[in-house]
Length: 362
Image 1 (cartoon, rainbow, N blue to C red):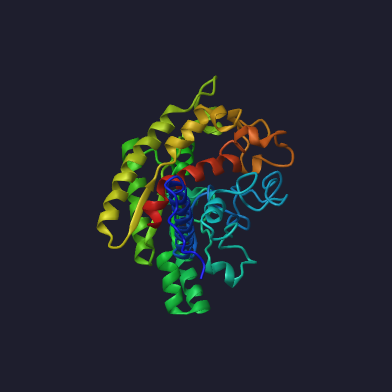
Image 2: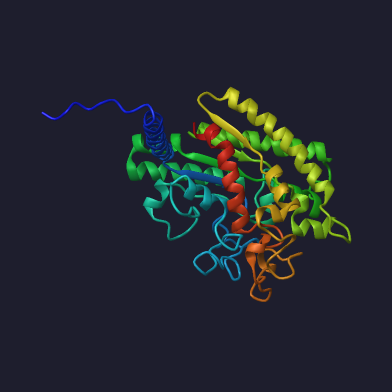
């Protein structure tokens, strides 16, 4: 027999302990990562152009972007995403390890297997106000809800009731709307002139609360609802309401702040009221405003204009092959006059997942 192993010397003991501790942390961290992915089998998304990956492509609407220069950084071609590349739906699914991109539910080439890991029902131009989608002929939240019911039936037909219930009950649900209500329906089109701002933000927050309750009834449990952004600071709103210096349009921002306070209050109440739910208010306003106000801190140069054309007005059909993009999209916070670049979205998503993933996913 060989000599018995002696205990490590006192000088080596701390080093060995630290090594063991680091291995333990690495193993537990990897296990935790796998566990998180295992409990989020799919991602399901509702809302507007921030999360629309192509549902508007075949609609008779001017709110679409399935043409150049949109998608220039997404496999080199337009996809129906209001961006140069990936949007938050894709990036969140990617960072959670679900899949690399999220297909639109209305994609005619959608495969059964695509349904099992999630889709987006979002439609550019939609809002919490029921008339917002009607004004521009896009898919309203109520229609998105109907598509979700249709989706559930399809998933059950593919994998059976038990597995479908697991997917529906453990999926991550994200809702992003409100910008078009404030910027378009209220301030630009004046379609709710019978409401003052407090009354209109009540309408919006009541609608948001009702929508969350509807998807909860259909099986959703992990539900994140994004706040309205600092809509007055996007390039088109600076142009429309920021005066000759194109400052942030204060009235739009104040409406967003008021709506956000009401939305947070209602979501906090729903979290307490709905059994086994994780209903989470996700603040986008503050981090995006920080990026806009201090762009160089995040590696950007320009935040008051988009990359497409002049950057002051071009969006949707106005951002086209006759309005070429800037030479360096990564220098811009915004892609067109309304939507951020993929680079901006990646900065935001990383920060938001760090802050809210535990509340949403456990």
